[in-house]
Amino acid sequence: MNCCRPQNYNDLFDEKTARRELRKYRRRGPSRTTRALITALEKHGVEGATLLDIGGGVGAIQHALLADGVTKALHVDASAAYIEASRKEARRLGHEEHVNYLYGDFVALAPEIEAADVVSLDRVICCYEDMRSLVGASVQRAKRLYGVVYPRSTALVRFMVNMLNMFLLVTRKTFRVYVHPTSEVEAEIIRGGFRRCFHREFFFWQVAVFTRNGQSG
Image (tube, rainbow, N blue to C red; front, side, top):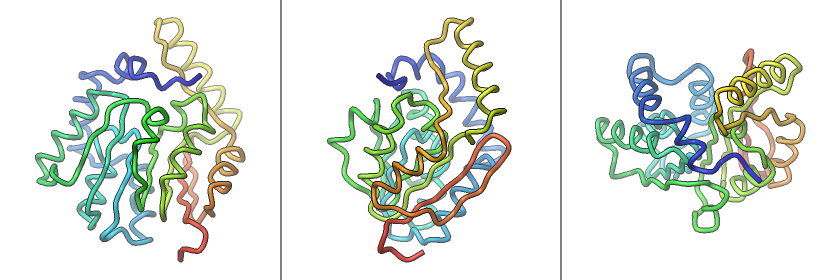
């Protein structure tokens, strides 16, 4: 069982939230953690690459990497409002024709999704109860680089997430947030044939980039 049913996302990540996030992105650009992930991916070279952006939100990663030379991006998201916000921004930036959009649960859709040179999951692992299915399916579709932003598995972060989930329960939201042990997340990625080449910790989040074994970087 997983928490990534589209209705769960649409209830929480609705049109109002997507509009607010898009306005914030246009004013300030990507968040600190998203910018750290983008910068780390850029250092490994993305020109001529393809991108699979899972749970891409308003599209911060795809917009940046398309400007850096990515030729094609696929945005998979379980929030219809975020897909529309990302499409709107891609149209404004002039690269809508280079992005395809797929609505739904990535794990359910994975069998029909082609592999890409770069795969990114920015604050997505924490939205999925069945981490192994999500990470396993997404790693299989990464040819060269795999980048993630997800919560640090510290006692304080777990406490904060428990408080958030209690609030969601009280407000009758079915969406839940998950803190998966870092060691288990990384073990699943490494099992898929990758090694970590970048890691940075923030207060709540951690950013990591992995390169496929045999690749430089």
